[in-house]
Length: 89
Image (cartoon, rainbow, N blue to C red; front, side):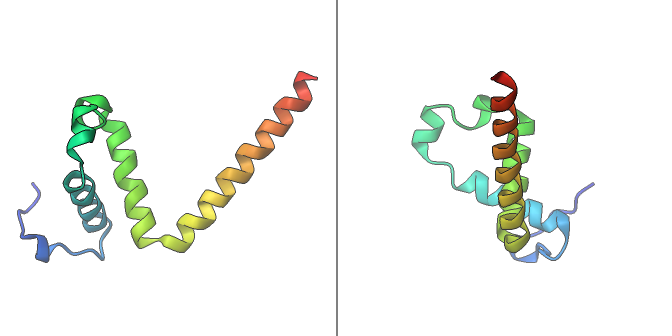
């Protein structure tokens, strides 16, 4: 069972603490317009919500590694598009 703590007691030096802090950030930053448009809650799957929390945690706590990974994924995507374009011709 997860021990209930106050927000100030969350240890952000652990992976669990980083995820909890990111989840709190996502949940507390929901705009009322997002709720009206169903962009949160029933509008996304639990897996998508989890991906958003992990993405935010990585952006916050592992900024340099995150930037490197984003660049790598862009490069890979661009390469795949070029390869697909070649095979279509």
